[in-house]
Image 1 (cartoon, rainbow, N blue to C red):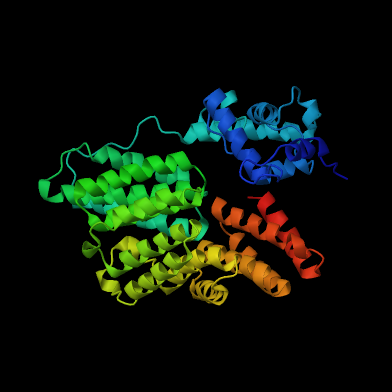
Image 2: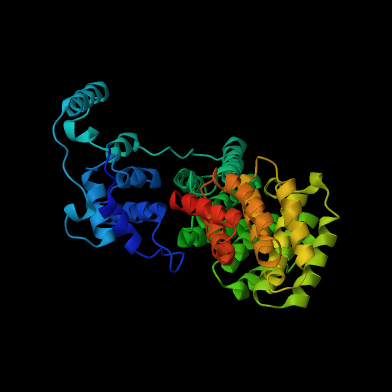
Length: 439
């Protein structure tokens, strides 16, 4: 029987999570810390995952690569591999077969022996020494390529979360920014800046969802600069709305409110969907600032704007803002009031409408609204019903990589603790614990 590596597991659990005070470091958080250590100290990109750490903790892998071993020792604060339960495997027939496999790779790829010894090698093999050339003149074809990339990545973000392809969209954004330095007919220059800004906002939101907050802020500033240069009021509103949401999420609702007000300076130039989106963000900031009446009044204004929407008049990046999204955004604003005993029914109805209305193309949004709904019912209603709602949200959250969704799950688990004597609630807390450990 395979022996579990309790040394590694205990070393991880001794460390506190950087995002959830009092909780142990998750496998995903450990993986990200090791990846960052290797990059900072070895100048190499590696892709250690929570799944790989799980295999090590279960004893399926006892001797990971050197970068992983050294990174784990550094992050977990130990001096030797033995303290983490690592031991060099004996040479067996399977080891010989592995050597033969590496020899095949060397022959097939025409590389040296050191190039096929681990995951880093494959990153090196696909790293291009010649970046995609920038055209001498930018035309409609190049602009449409940037817009298409933004649409595709935005769709992936909604479906899979920001953690999956964040590096890919960042690389695409770097190339798109290089286009800004090329010659471009004056009649197309605004369109070029708008397309790059659209991609920048998409990349920034994915970084925000993955909690790469400083990366997100830089990309948001780039996207806003592009919108300003292009004189694109619609893109400007979208970027400022995203920046406000990040600020509110990071515990700075006052700054979030300021960003929303900045976007609303010329609200007459915006579409109803854009105004509804911004008013929903304003309501979320006001709720965090405990301004209950202002929150409710702003939700009403957002509803009024939403009723005026004509889909044909909206920008591509606003097509996501449908009835489910609006219900979720306004329901999130009212949630902060509802858990304090105010407007419980209204918050619950809106969150329930969001869960019911989001299609399978938006599992992250459905998961986040479902988790908030479960948390609200857990605090104000029947814990068994809350457990049932939470179980459905877990199914959606399990398909995406989103740090925001995971943190909402942690909050639900914490709020459910007082009902853990209820069988359904105890099962829910166990399921959440298993989910967050793999994210």
